Image (cartoon, rainbow, N blue to C red; front, side, top):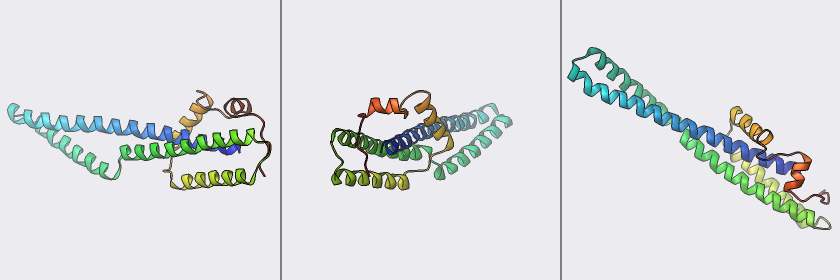
Length: 174
């Protein structure tokens, strides 16, 4: 049960890191878009005034690059992907919090009931559904999540740290 909690927490953190990564990519693309179209606009205005062939070529090339860049964005939208990963992270966070409450409830109980087993199965089914619907993450996001969880101690999983987050003794669920 604690291992399932840890896996959900890891999935949550990986989705968060992927959302951050895609959000950063979206910002970089916007900056480059403004730079390319700004260059195209400025050189288009300046070329006739200066009667410069070089400025005209720069304007033409910048316009073509801007067009290709915009066309590529129709099929590749990191901002949309970031939103999908943020939604998945929030969903995993909800399940992670449900697991924490469930573990606390089971730890406080003197015995494990059929209701507790049903709740565990319900949580496991929610995780399976989330896993099947969540967008694919990258190795970079996984590495960032691993670093955040292990090195930065955003959430760790050794027994001592889990015991701090969750109640200690619990009856085994079979």
